Image (cartoon, rainbow, N blue to C red; front, side):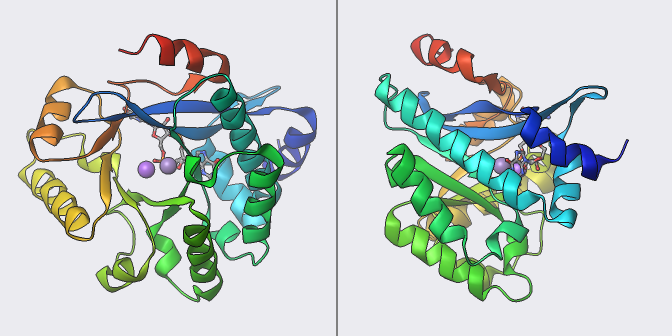
Length: 254
Ligand code: G
Ligand code: G
Ligand code: MN
Ligand code: NA
């Protein structure tokens, strides 16, 4: 089993697909956005986790083609749902650092938006703090271009990476996503609770929305709501859904 070779075939054979995880507004309890999450149904190995194959795709450069497929598929899907009556929500797509170092990424996003007719404000791009490391000129130009276009930007896994608050101030982002590792023991670990409170107030002082990931219980949700967190994502509200289950979820939310 060579993952690199199989991954090359995966795109051609249609083994990659997306799941969609709903995100809720904490104040109103309503659906606010959706994150697209890649999945790989390998013919022999079964379901392979992106945690396993995305790092390989980044190393081999295959992330370029895969990333373009993810963007096009997610935007096409969202444009379809918008036509079918889905309200004005955002579709969040994960970008890897390697994609952000490519000068053509801006053109790609713009042409995909044009092709699909999706409104720029309905696309949200998730980047990680790692973008602040090393030469980030290309990435900064891309982020500024996306902001000017009206595309939303968020920082994923916030709090786990190399975090320079000085860079955070310069990044044209709209939202912080608190990493799920801080949410897990929210009720028992005073350190995690303190970090969550700090991220929420930091985000709000910088005029950013704050979303918590990996919320699995009512207690975690209550903790976050009381502390003023804006949104949640996690199994408690909804698991990642197959595309054909999303409209049913929208019509009949929890
Ligand atoms: O969905 P799951 O928890 O299995 O995802 C594991 C990891 O894979 C997460 O870090 C997530 O951000 C990442 N991931 C999921 N979908 C994509 C994608 O389309 N592109 C990139 N670059 N990463 C993704
Ligand atoms: O790194 P990123 O935030 O993009 O990855 C999100 C990942 O977290 C997805 O792979 C998704 O499957 C997973 N996930 C989403 N909600 C929950 C949750 O409530 N609990 C756990 N353990 N994982 C979750
Ligand atoms: Mn993400
Ligand atoms: Na995350």
